[in-house]
Image 1: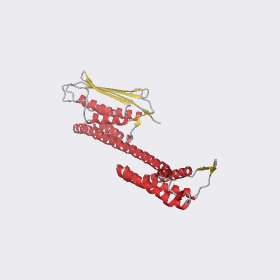
Image 2 (image 1 turned 30 degrees about the vertical axis):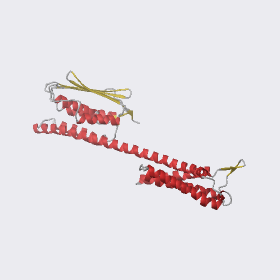
Image 3 (image 1 turned 60 degrees about the vertical axis):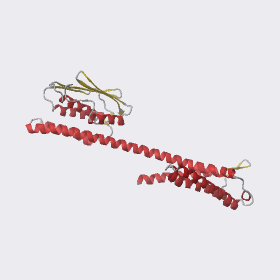
Image 4 (image 1 turned 180 degrees about the horizontal axis):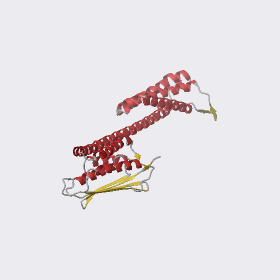
Length: 341
């Protein structure tokens, strides 16, 4: 409501400035090469006649007919209104201000059109441009709102997926009364705190995301006993960059899920993250067995969500490749980062 009132105020100010400017040019006459600066009463009356016609077009015919695609009615009503404006000028105003000269004869339709049309066209044209800019701004705001809503929805799908997996693991360790249970609770609490409270913005500091990934990997390691080789390398990570949160962790989570689904006893997950100028290079390799029940490793809710988020947050600024090779699932992702101003 406050924004609506502000928009009305801006438009009123715009119209006042526009009317004043157009009237100055309308009343600008030259007589014997001398500039006439005095404003005559008839100039005000003739201008108000045209301005009234423009007002009706701007605030009634445009929104009620043209913008609703009633083009036929719009043309008919505009022509009728212009004809009425010409009649007022010819039969009323000229009779009042020029009864013995211009008011005594009819100069012709085209002459009258040249008198009224320039002012009406200018006033209507500026109003049409104002409406177009307003609609464009509203469209951009709507697109931003839809984009934000979609991102929040995608995030909401990622968080429960991670939570359910780890709560199941925590339940298993609690039943066994394992000494690892307190560690799992602490690590899970740290990860969830980040996911729920510290990454609500579209972009977060890169060092914060790296800290989250280290905690995430440490937590996921607890799912695997001594039959694994897990390596996370985060070299050359500098301060001052921003990155979209909870994207890289999806690939890491899938790496653990795929490896755990392997029928073989060997589990290997290698993660390399580094900066190259302003590009973040992410590579994640994990072993899997082609004999496992995973039919399509490159699909699933998590990966489909992260692909959509990349399209929304990094349009034409990311490159993602996913492939399987020699019983390894390989993800390569390049992100063009922005600096934290």
